[in-house]
Amino acid sequence: MTLRIFCLFILASAFITVSSFVKDQSPAIGSKKVISTVIIDPGHGGSDFGARGKYSNEKDICLAVSLKLGELISKEFPSLRVLYTRTEDTYPELHDRAKFANGNKGDLYLCIHVNAARGKRVGEIVGYKTVTYYTGKGASRKKRTKRVPQYRYTNLPSEAKGTETYIWGAHRSEDKELAVIENAPMMQEENFEQNYGNVDVNAPEFIAISLLKTKQYFKRSATLAGFIQDEFAKVGRVDRDVRQRAIGIWVLQATAMPSVLVETGFISNPEEEDYLNSQQGQEELSACIVRGLKNYLAWLEQKQQTGGVETTSATLAKTMSFLETVENRHKLSSK
Ligand SMILES: [Zn+2]
Image 1 (cartoon, rainbow, N blue to C red):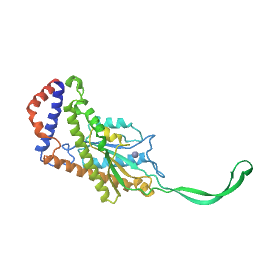
Image 2: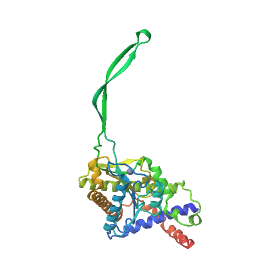
Image 3: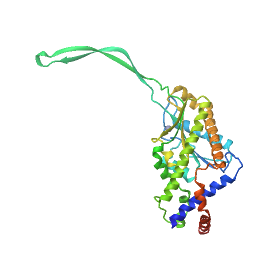
Image 4: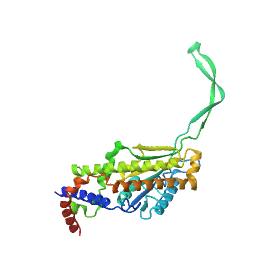
């Protein structure tokens, strides 16, 4: 019974949110109506240097770009709350970063990184050396010599350049579901057990809702990633596209919200290392991400205003009257 009420309550909250979007026609990009909290996660930090270039480290570039990005978001969308997983040269554990994002009820997770590619190792012959060797055994043993080429190896810097934006791999969506399940807003409430009793996260109703959320987050993450890459391409960055990856992007799976990881450029390419370390480069990167975010918010708004919501409101509507009673009871009981 308690589980049933709990699930229906989630449905009710979703319906209330959905219907308030549908009713409200006033466009306000960046207002609380679409999203309210953005989490920025500068990759690496502290003893984790990330990739290393000729003269700079990934962790420092991640932080510099992230701080500029946050500043620009606040300027463009004053009503958005911007939170950072780190603002100094420290290393928060990955699960702590995810916990921070989930605990602060982030609506979006932007993870900033710098890419690196191994360059080619080329060898050239710089001379020859004579080496002695023996063949045969006993009386037929003979001493021989041969000329062996001597090489000098040089590591050529990698020519890889450009930006790519990652979303978590679709094949790993079980992990995202788990994050969604574990972070259902109600489960973060104080007195949760007291109010809702023991919730079975394996219950079909609960899993159905989590799946719905997971799909919605995937679609949103992919859309945002696409908008961001479009902006990079417009300013002439080499567009390495939106990619899915399951390794090294654990935070993307662990955050119960749409999330993207931007690999801003290649520190292994000397030209790109200069760009990544320059004021102009960092500002350009931040501005591209902000324009991508702006398009994403407009897309979300339009989707919500035209009723293109990602939930089946008809099903939800049926349970409404019953749920109002449940909700009122919940309000009374939590007083
Ligand atoms: Zn990195």
